[in-house]
Amino acid sequence: MISQKVKGYKISEPFFPAAIRKNDKLARWLIWIFSVVIFLTITALGRVKFEVNLGFDSHLFAKANAFINASVSILLVAGLVAVKKRNFIAHKRIMFGALILSVIFLLSYVCHHLFTGETRFGGSGMIRTIYFFILLTHIFLAAIILPFVLFTSYRALIAEWPAHRKLAKITWPIWLYVSVTGVVVYLMISPYYA
Image 1 (spheres, rainbow, N blue to C red):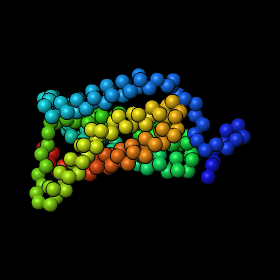
Image 2: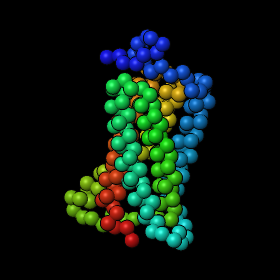
Image 3: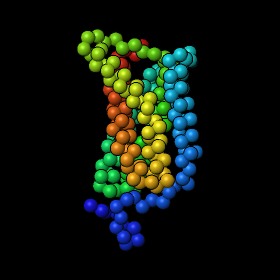
């Protein structure tokens, strides 16, 4: 059950020293401010469009977003497998990769919406109902996942493993759902890009 050794002793928790000093009050403020700023920025995207000739199809950002979301989904599953096998070093690296890709996704997502504006879904009937169900659940969960991801990461950075594990049980499935449905939404809406 326990596979990692540190100085000859087997341990059941990751043996990583805290990467940052614990300061819950500051962390809460920073996480909530960052989460609200990102939420407001993304909300405002529906009202802003830049008419700029980029020299390439601006929907390339959407393709990049789908690729990034698919990659994050794979990393999330790999991260879960690594932690279940108690390979905490691999888990840490994989989850860090998922975080970095998520930041890149946010930048690409903002660029896509700034340069292309809104695209309306053209399907009808049952496929339209399915699309909007997936889209609405995706949007709602995407709106709330960021603080969960950041608080879960913070608990890991300060080496509070029980709290990290408890939060991760909530964060992981939501994050995975958001990343997978991001790909599905792209595949369903991309035929209607102008």
